[in-house]
Image 1: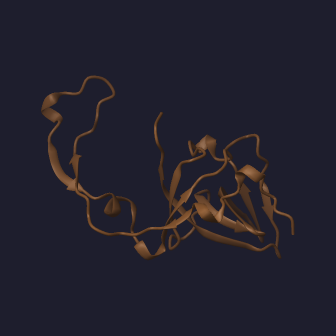
Image 2: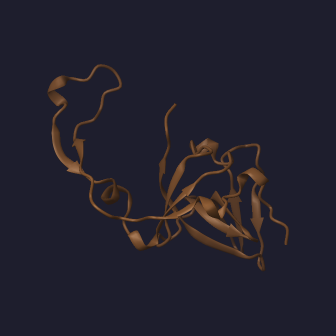
Amino acid sequence: MISQFHLLDRLSPENFYKAKVGAKIPIPFFDSKVAAGFPSPAENHIEKVCDLNELCITDKEATYFVRVGGDSMSGDRIEPGDVLIVDCTREHVEGKVVVVWLNGDHAVKRMQRLKEMVVLHSSNPKYNPIYVHPGDDFRLFGVVTHVIQKLA
């Protein structure tokens, strides 16, 4: 069957990376909120250290990093080049951002179930919903738990 994904919307296999949790890298963690204006110097004290592995990964055997290739999720501020942290053990909750496999391609979408059918929604209005019918080669790869992006 021909893929329903736009060429730039697909997640290519070379953009999937298995999470490797090695040595902890402690990073100072400021346990107070950061003001958007001028913060009080008295509030800037380190409460503890955190490790990004502990913050972002709950199951290292079932977590992947996936680099985004298209702009279909730009309404959710997921842009080309961003890195998704995907947990393959999380149970799907209606409307979550997920990585799916459909008829030979991976993609990132919001998933909705309608009786026997699944509808995959983009958050960019230039993309139409994709309807997954019984008999399509469809699998839920995992739920996106975090988005890592480089600010300009």
